[in-house]
Amino acid sequence: MSRDSVESQRAFKEKYGFSFPLLADTDSKICDAFGVIVERERDGKKTMGVARTTFLIGADGKVSRVWPNVNVEGHAQDVFSAL
Image (spheres, rainbow, N blue to C red):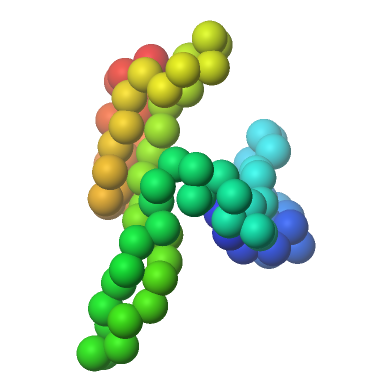
């Protein structure tokens, strides 16, 4: 899920050949609900942005695991190992 536009999500999905849907949270309701909007500082300027976080949600709809501050490299394997 991303706060990017639906069109941006579509292009990303096509670029990487994903066969599953990507969700666009353009109004930030889901990001806000999961508490992933944080203050960031870049080049001395403070802005609000998304803390890259993975939530593993079980078939029962409950969050079973959270990976905060995700580093993309090797992360997919970490998630698959938790399944």
